View 1 (cartoon, rainbow over the protein chains, first blue to last red):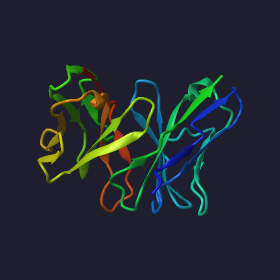
View 2 (cartoon, each protein chain N blue to C red; view 1 turned 60 degrees about the vertical axis):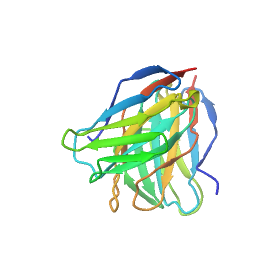
View 3 (tube, one colour; view 1 turned 90 degrees about the vertical axis):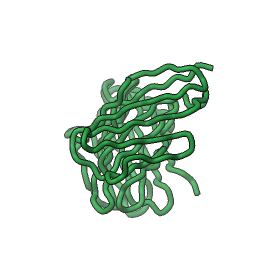
Length: 113
Length: 113
């Protein structure tokens, strides 16, 4: 049973470009979470999604950031017009319904030049 | 916010010694979880303790929970070099609700061989 798969592992973008981060949850998991981590810091919650629904996006910046979890395919975290402050590790986690324990992917390290 | 705060921020001990980390939180919880993060990797779930439990064991891990003080501790006995990692407590989540997990700032543990 494959774990949570995130790609790409590393992503380099220039300021103003778009970044698309993908997350495939574990088989049977219908809940996906995105977190951001800056160096030497904890994880900051961004968004919580179920299939085709955003449950909680209280941690998402109002502008430039969006997330989706379509009926088919991976969850996508999209950052438009990236700035240097967006450089961070972005982690995806999934869980079955009722969320308790989360299963994390290995993260995408976004570097904005 | 139910964010946990870990204490200490960093801890270095000799291999074989016991390591104790603490977590404080602010509001009522259904459960509290501990996760480990190796450098550059995603988080791995270690143990979950429910609000009606006071102590729980898993291998060399022992977790206590004091809901009256809104605090938890993680004890790792007979530490090994492989235990070097950052440890995070997390609160939130529930058996039935759609509640996100909120992570603390972490304790960076270094085991000296």
